Image 1 (cartoon, rainbow, N blue to C red):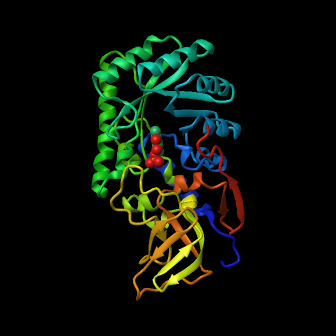
Image 2: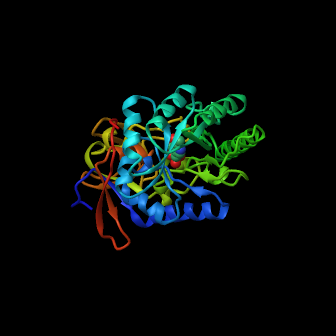
Image 3: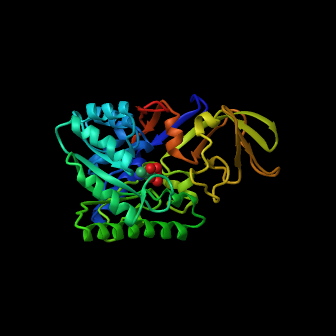
Length: 366
Ligand SMILES: Cc1ncc(COP(=O)(O)O)c(C=O)c1O
C-alpha cells in the first residue's frame, strides 16, 4: 500500500459489476425498463457495461454527457434536463445525428424552445414532461397543471409527447429507511395517478419514468410505472449506506489517501480534502450522515473536517489511530461528486489488474 501515490479514486470492478447486474435483474423481474442516469459516473466504460447488462438506454443531465456517450456508441439517450437557450438548442440539434434523443420539458417557455428546435429538424422530437413528486426542484405539479402542459406539448406538430418523468431526490433527506420507502411509494403512485388522469383526457402515456437510487426498487414495483432511472447504484456510497439502501460492503468506489501528519495522539491528517472528496453531505440534507466519509477498518474514527487538500480525522484518546505513511480507504459521502472531481478512475478488475478509465464531461462547462 505504501508504494502507491495518493489521493486516488479507486473502483472495484467486481463490486461495480455486481451492482450493475443486480439492478438490471430487478428491472427485469419488476417488468420495467432500466435507463440509468450516467451523471453518476460520466464514464463510457461503465455506461457500456450497463447497456450490456440490459439497460434500454441511458439518462444524462448535461448535453456534454450525451455527446460523450454518443461518441462511445450509445444511441438511446434521454436528456433529463430543461434545454433552455439558443446555443444549447443548436448543440442538441447537432447531436441528433449521432444519438436518438428524448428531451425533457416542464414549462410553456421550454415548450417554445423545443418548438423552435423541432422546426429546424425533420423528425418529431420525443418529449417527456417533468413532474414534481415532492423534491420541489423542476417539474409541474401532478393534476391540472400537468394536464394543461401536456396538452400544449401535444399541440406542437414537431413534438411527440411520450410520457412523464420524475426524480424523488427528497428521499436523500429522509430520516429513516421507512421514510425512504414511503417517498418511493408516493413517487410511483403520484405518477401512475397522473398517467391515468392524462389517459382520461385522451392523452396516451407510453412512458412513466421514476427513480433515484434509494427509491428505484420501491417506485419501480408500482403497477403502471414503466421505467426506472437510478444512477448512483453503480457505486453506492456513505449516503446510501446511511439511508439503509445497502451495507457498506456493497460500495464499489473508494478514495485512497495517505496519512501525512499526526499532530496529536487523536488527530491525523490525510492528503484528501474537499477537492478530492467534495464537501457533499447529501444534496437534500441527510441527518444520518456523520462526517465526510467512512474510513474502512477504522469505524470509530470521524473524518470531521475538510480543507481543500487536507482531511482531518479525529478519534478518542484511547482509540487505535493510523500512523503517518498509512494509506486509508475512504468511502465518500457522495460517489458521484467525488468522481466528477477526478480525471480518471483507477479500476481493479477481477484479477487485480489495474486499468484507468477516464471520467468525461467533468466540471461546470457543458
Ligand atoms: C432526473 C434524475 N433522474 C435520475 C437521477 C438518479 O438518481 P440517483 O443519483 O439517486 O441514482 C437523478 C439524480 O440526481 C436525477 O436528477
